Image (cartoon, rainbow, N blue to C red):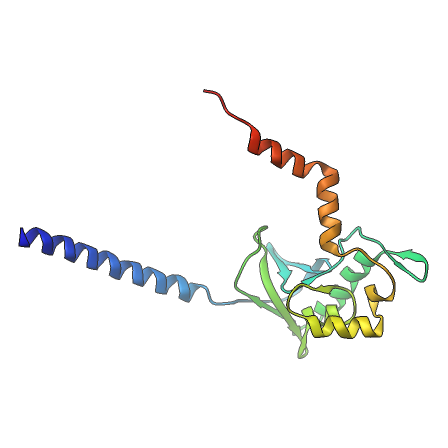
Length: 183
């Protein structure tokens, strides 16, 4: 009986040690990825380089097709945000680093160029709103009436939610949850 107990104990100990080693390996592999090179702005808060897709962490820029109002006129704020981001990442010393991924498998990054935090600069210029990380920059942009803050706009999240509702995506998702498969 004692021999059987020792065998089980030794097996559990070995399993626990393997689990610890695996956790350490996963943690070591979770180091931030740093990307540099010729970036392409997909919109005001997303970049690509080669096959890698990245999302600027802590900000939310207007959707590419989104328009805003300034001085009683509509302007293509989504396109302007994309152009602003492209200008900021064009420098040869631009580097983006991050470790997590979003629901679309984009690397969540903070980008820097010439000592400037590009994510924060997009918010400070009023070309994006803070999404949890850049409140001071947003306050400054509001006070200076920069970019989006020079007029009226819908928050990008609200535009996306509206587009999902209009497309029927939410209705389809609810229906999928109600479907019963008969066998």
